[in-house]
Length: 308
Image 1 (spheres, rainbow, N blue to C red):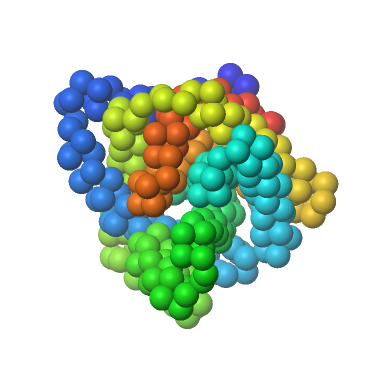
Image 2 (cartoon, rainbow, N blue to C red):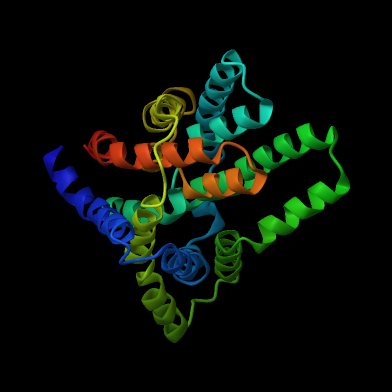
């Protein structure tokens, strides 16, 4: 496990550096917001386009892979919902907690780290996990909360949801990359080099931005946040591993990538959703903080298991 820890440590050290910069106010919240915007709209989008444009849809899409990941997510989602309802909280809060339990930081942490550590062949499976998280579960949480509040599903809600997905630069960059790949025409060298240079800023920029954003988060409701972190860091990869290895017999390499992606800490976009809907943002904030800190150990263990 030590060699894996030594490989993952630089990634978490970048998060730690960003956290220090945020806590010391060397990097203000405004600076963090602008860095995050740069990474989200430019650097990470360039990285995703470059990966997707050099892959075919067949290299990304695998029905057994998708079924295994959805099964693992569904089980943990149901567990988190069940515990939330047992505690007597509202449907909206329960949905946000379930989102914390299954949505990992695949975009800002998983894509840069897993492709580096597990090799270029990890790009396809990571993109598939990211697409499922963004499209399936962002849709589910929006429909649940909007449905509860309005008492029905309207065409306007569906339209707004579709527009929101189409405006997401990660989805757009992956779709454009796959569209280019489908033409069979190689990406011209200057464009490929441009995307490589710009995408190269995604890894340090995203990790630093994660740390700096954590500096403004609090650890309130620690008991609940600890439970949600346990769901995300332990139950989620365990359920996905069972589905991938036992139930759906996914090929070992993509299965390993899927399991490693499932072990990632709670994603920052869950906090954005919680703030947008005004549902338990402090609870989500604490879950992100705790799960990210603990993931230094748990991600290393899972990576050692899948790469061993």
